[in-house]
Image 1 (spheres, rainbow, N blue to C red):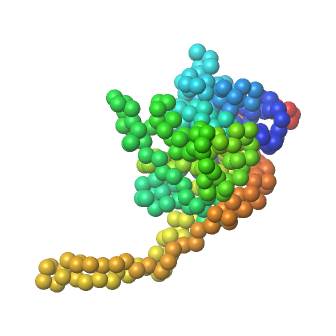
Image 2: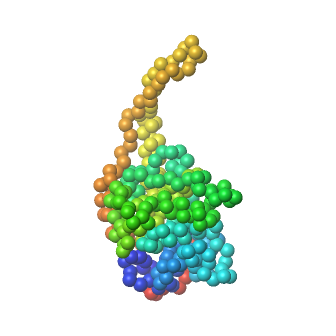
Image 3: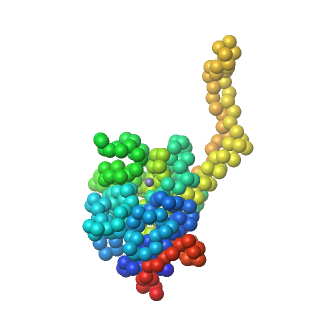
Length: 321
Ligand SMILES: [Zn+2]
């Protein structure tokens, strides 16, 4: 299997791309980023106005090019009128590709390790060097503020309006007067690949309230890397917060109104600091260092799914075979 679908290879054949997309779906399932739900897509290498993603089956069971559907970026309609049924939430992908011309792959996940950060208001931040792309804060997008009138309130990104709103949470990109934010400086990969730097996203990952997360990247391997290490970073942060609280605990100092039935009149929570998060520069430099190493885990992850009989990649081999 080749690596470097974007932007390291000048030309990617569709056969090669199909095989990579099926492998990526298997890897994301194997690592618990996707279960029966969630999806990865990739922009067409020969036509930026379309993208490919699996039809409506579980990611682990995607197997052949017939399981993949080509969609129009403009409105998420299938290019072939008689295409198989697709995922409801394909508007996540279409609206991101529409807003960010340099983005070529998108992963959307309901991964359970992420959910605490989608419902608790505890901010997800980069805590480990493998996830420097998270920067010093990951936005949480809330569908409840954006449902079109008359639409279902089921949290699913089932139309272009919700997709566009989520896409905008990755930030500026379209404003001609956009001033680089500190997040941009922390995300060199999100700057480097575009001819139109004002259309690059500020964030690699956006959390979705009570739902999951979405990550975008310049290529399939980068998207898979980010999805897996977003999950790993969330696990590390959750565990760190848990053991820290268990070990140090929190004490409350204040006054209790005994005559008033024991009500607390005034109180202040005392905690022993916070867990250590990466600084802006650490996040920036860590991601810069790791970007050139993505082919190493990609090779391992490909082999893992190759030897697991659950995963059947029956796509022709592309240019490598
Ligand atoms: Zn979803």
